[in-house]
Image 1 (cartoon, rainbow, N blue to C red):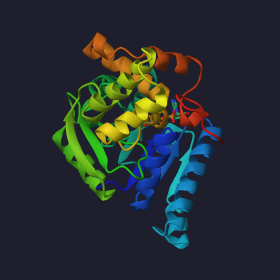
Image 2: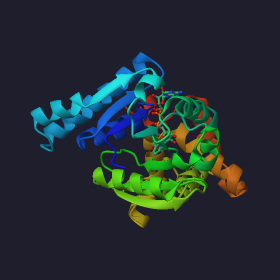
Image 3: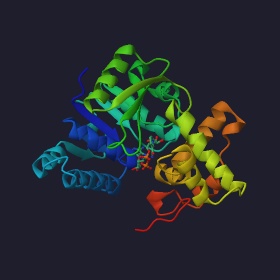
Length: 284
Ligand SMILES: NC(=O)c1ccc[n+]([C@@H]2O[C@H](COP(=O)([O-])OP(=O)(O)OC[C@H]3O[C@@H](n4cnc5c(N)ncnc54)[C@H](O)[C@@H]3O)[C@@H](O)[C@H]2O)c1
C-alpha cells in the first residue's frame, strides 16, 4: 500500500521530526497531541527544521512553504485518522499510555490503516493486544534526530502480516531512509547494544571511576564514539533512557539494572537537553 496520508501522534522530539521528514518527502501529515500548547510547540519545531533546511540550501523558501502546507494539526483522534493510510505513535515510553492511544486507534481508524509505534524498547506484540486486528500493527523505530538519522528499524510483532511489513519498508524508502527488519525483542537491534552502553557509562559515575567529562572523552578517543555516552544520553532524554533500561531489566535481567545516577537525575526532573540539565547543564 502506498502511504499518502500519515498521522503522527505525539509531537515531542521524535513525532515532530517524523512529521517533518514525511512532509518533505511529499506525504500529507496530520499531527496530534494532548493539548494545544504541545501541538503549537510541535509546529514550532517543524518550522525551525524547515528554516534550518532553507538556510542550509536543502530547500528553497517556496518549497519550505509547500512542505509546511502539507501539515495539519488536530486534538481529535477521530478526526485525525479519517483517510489515513498509516499512523505513527510517538507518545511517552509507557505501556499504559501506548495502550490508551492504540485503543482509540482501534476504535476510530479504518481497519486497513497501518498502526505503528515508535517505541524504543516496548513489545510491539503487547502494544497490539488492544487492537482489533493486530496484523496491521508494527514498530517503526526512527532515531534521534529523525531528519539526520538514516536508519528506521521495522519491528515485526507476533501477529504482524508480511504485507504490512512490506508497505512499511516502502514508506521508509520513500523518506530516503534505510529500513532494517527486526524481531520483537527488548531494544530491538540498536538500543539493545546502545542503551546498555550509556547505562554502563552512568554506572562508572556511580562508582566514581572517572569524571563525566573524562568518561565521555575516553569513549570518543578510545572507541571513536561520535559523542560521549553521557552527552548522548542527554540528547536521547534521560526519562526515555531510563524507561527503556527498565524494560530491558524487566525482560532480560539484573545486568540491565539502571544506574543510580540515572534514576536520581530523572527524579529531580533533570532529563537532559530538553529540560536544560541532565548529566551536563545547557544554556537557553
Ligand atoms: N528521544 C529519543 O531519542 C527517541 C528515539 C527513538 C524513539 N523514541 C521513542 O519515541 C517516543 C516518543 O519519544 P520523545 O522523545 O519524542 O518524547 P517526548 O516526551 O519529547 O514527546 C512525547 C509527546 O507525546 C505527547 N503525548 C503523551 N501522551 C499522549 C497522548 N495520549 N496522546 C497524544 N499525545 C500524547 C506529549 O504531550 C509529548 O508532546 C517514545 O516511545 C520513545 O521511546 C525516542
